[in-house]
Length: 358
Ligand code: SAM
Image 1: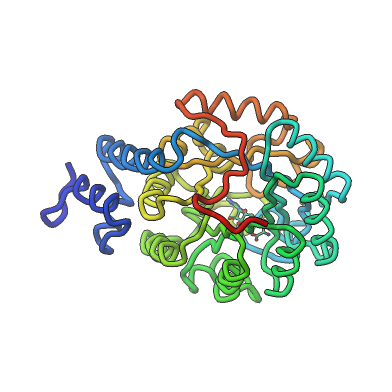
Image 2: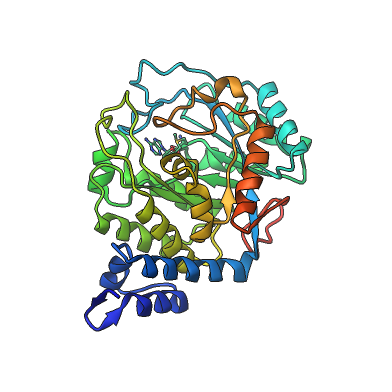
């Protein structure tokens, strides 16, 4: 059993479960390394908290990757502007509505439109998409993940029917943010977006890329404390994975064990949060998503993009689920979730207690 000071890791897990936070050095100790027994105790505590709120339910989000055009040049990302090898595409309104229809028939009640920051998607087009999807499927929730916009743009999308927005801060540390992103991107603007989104009334998802180049445990802790304070409704945590056509092509990809520990820690810090077991986690380990569910995650995001474009939305090398049709992804995901004792729930899967109907 690991001891530091006179407290064991088990004491720390108990305290985190009871209080939802820990002093800095204690939280740092939970980032590991931990023994197998200690890790299992951390995951068991996260499952207990998760099940006290969500039971055995796992929510599905149907991910539609609408465009891989991007005006940004993030050093880690395979669809960055400078990657001349990326084969660019964008889906039009009919294609996106078709993905939603197919997804609805498969039991999806949340659609997530994600894409690079593609100027072709003007506010007018995004609002039109949002209102068309909401009128075609009024019992579904619509999430957007289209990057940094002005407050006015976010408000317009919200008024048009989008209820949720995902925007990972990626890293809270200004120096580390600068290491990952060229100007004009700044952590200040990224966080400004997140505060605006929350203030407008969205259910907001933030999150980090774990083990991105240059990231330290202190950076991760800064993010954990910031997220505790920000109180997001959803947190997307996935390991960094290198992409062959980016400046970080030779950097090591993120590891499984610490990603699972961070998922479990987040569940204990933010008990009600919607926490996806991400595709990146499934990419670094064949059972990564199942292990994520067992570490406290309660959301999965199968791909609903047309099979013909999936290989083009290549954020990192080896990305899984780029070949299957939507129905196949859905079946596969259900079987994976069942295999660890959980159940897919046909539901919008709002944040617990969310009452702002829209
Ligand atoms: N443009 C939107 C934005 O900035 O939030 C959404 C698209 S962006 C490609 C979606 C997410 O992909 C990012 O938040 C980032 O965390 C993740 N991502 C990009 N490159 C990655 C990589 N090499 N490894 C792991 N995740 C990556």
